[in-house]
Image 1: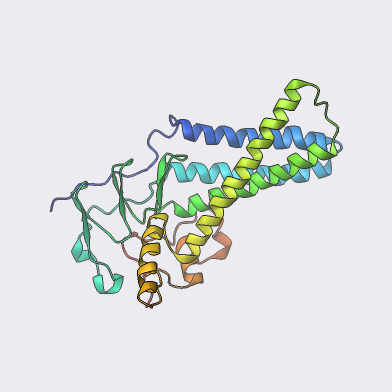
Image 2: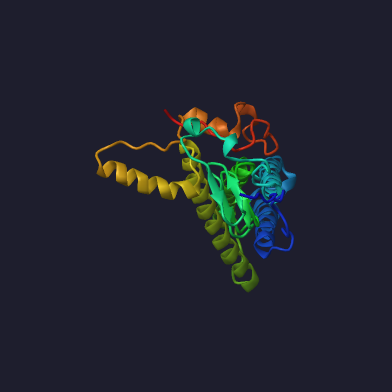
Length: 276
């Protein structure tokens, strides 16, 4: 079977993507409204006070990490299959999987890789194609994506709390239509983002602890049901224990877990240990 060389990089056309621009706009609005509107109203002395500077400093760091990890996840190659990958490079006994081929790429693909119809190539340990970063989430950028949604969830909850503190502890003239409209719309946005990002974070924390991708979870439910129907216990083949599952994605150094650029623990993404 012939092989086609995979394209490197996964962020083509990011700046032209409306969903990506919408995410950037939402983060920008969230930062502006939280620091320069809610905090300025709620805290005596505004952001110039010690209390205001404290909250503004924390929220600025969260926003920076959110922007940076989002940018890295969007422009990073999610994981390209090595051009020289073939069945002879695998160890089916160790991996517990036979080599597969991709008819669309006209090439072999490693275990856990899938073909993305949007990116039009196979992606290593593909989780899903994310519209909001205009890129696939795969082996090489999954950690960065996790760090993004972690800070997005924390930032959304933080801004929502400050919003309600300002709303209920500060006198506002809601007879002014523009003021009332601003607080209604921004409040809806904060609540929506808090619920959405918290749910997404919880989902990916679950997948992280089980060493599964979103795609693999679908097969996991089917295989688990079949096993239980036969009176057997089922365990996901790549679930190698909580600590090993986490360190396989975030790295062995806990001090670097929240660093989006700390990816030295990643290998070529073509082989993964399996549970015994």
